[in-house]
Image (cartoon, rainbow, N blue to C red; front, top):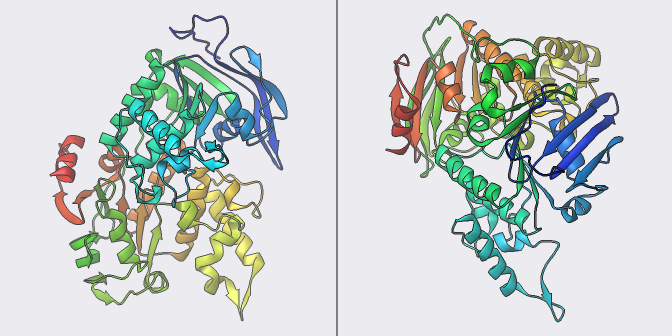
Length: 504
């Protein structure tokens, strides 16, 4: 391993040291003696493919799982992190990709949940509000302390999670994919806050699959692969291509696979689609063999448009055609029967039944074909799913593995498998690579290209502008429920030009 001492590592002991961390689950060796150090005032990027061990390592640090072997020291003193409470008492806070907020409670109520301030046996909500206001002032943001968190924007909920972490006198802050649902402007605001926390001496472990962010915000980077350390670098001394190669264990010359485009006739046609203010008079065409990107800021109406096409929401007006035939779609069952598949933005809540096995998840939209006189043909089911496991390189110990126990990339591949088995003619990919590592991204991109080559119509919804530019044949931009721009010549277009349509 390439050991590099960061410029601010002048103390005798690091703020955090994890040595020889080992953890196994049934059928899986998740960590194989991982080492990690973090210094006060440092941003450490933790990189690795899905399944590399990042999440397991963070769960050990946050007290969610006990380690099988290894030691953890904070400020030079060994700590026993057997529970989340023990981690909080040690000054460790973890902000997960899926927020851990109670939607019906306000920001201040969420921040002090489980450690409420009391006076004479009664909750001292005035004191909590005062402390909450002080914390948001420290973060340099204004927050409506009377508004329930389920009415806050994603960026505001992210700020509540950060303020919630600071209530505990946090020394070590872990941020897991913190910008996954943020706009570019919100991401830059978050970076300002991270730099402020860094100046306060807080050590930050930053997990992201977005390399632009890694190079902008971090001081040092550690790469894991297959549950073990691969490399460690000062961020100023390593290239993007080198990090990608170390993550995936092979050279990826390009982040986006090349393809020769053969565009056919119009397949999906959407005309005058509307639902309240969320989607207003939206119309476009996707042709066979074409990948059309639909982009815009969060809340622009992209996902709402996809849900109307798929019948998940009832449209006020509009028409949907497939191959020139008007479709009467009132629910997802009718959309699936017509040949339309939707890979939802939130695979955990909408794309998978997390408590069910991966094989059962694969079978759900395919039961009619896999069944005979009301009974599932188990052998056919197992063999067909096994074929997609091999084709998509899904990492599972067995087909009975629960979907919730898979990494994000492998969960996404299971969702892909069930729609591929349906042989849909139109596939809507809503944020297809959110929370997915660079190697799995490339595999998903290759699959999308293969589907397009077979004449499928692909609508890709994405807020990742490099992905939009790298994959799309044509770009549609939305703002406040309306289409504001269409870009057909991608040879000279820039991210800034796309953003002009998104905010104009």
